[in-house]
Image (cartoon, rainbow, N blue to C red; front, side, top):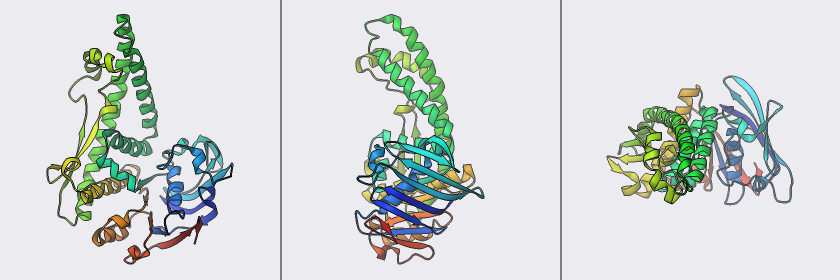
Length: 354
């Protein structure tokens, strides 16, 4: 996966720009609030996922404008493609000149992974953030997983709605049987897909973390399934009496979690800030390796404001040891790129890219 050109018009603070990136490392330098992250965000939107900065499409538009667009020309599987997203109060996607629907329709056509300062929350925050990581990564590989997840989440909401009235009307048990069976069917598929993804992830994650930590520590990952060894529909039936008071469904893949261990110790409980940052970064780089192994090509690597938080050894690893894939990296301090051996450096000032 190689981007040959990227153009933006009326996107965030960018009025109009076009860049021709290097096939390997691309460093985007500039002071804060100049538009560095806007370049990263524009590329990320072509994965079909939501922005990692906002849920409102209108915020993607340059102030005062009613329409904007971003476009990439890229090579995937040896074939040159063009993808465009028009932005108004919503996002509309075009692929090779043809309108294909909303931006989510691009899922699977262009692949990338992103690491930003907020991704520290993968380790520090609650389970929902780690589930989001899994769902986003898997959705790029298997677009049908996105539909499966939507159907499952809809069934959870329907069960939650019914369970609230169950204590007043026992005849609702028939409807609960139907939705709980659907949750079991779809939930097992979700968990199976997640475990399969994690199994491949484990082939790369320890070695990547070893490189980032200079070989000093061992990282392990564990998937915690909330209904391991039980049929989900039977467990949900057992928990009806408890769930009807809370109005929630408290078991299923929407409650599962990931755990990380360094040298046997739980990172979330005992890890330092630096260890958590290194685990999160390793997880993202390993995601890229998984996508490459399953799809046959490396996704584009997007690293937003990661250099300032790393020591020189880790900075060198990022700059020069992920050379198999095209990468875009933002930073404020140009001295952080002094060890760059191959690639291009772009400077961003007030939305203009030089």
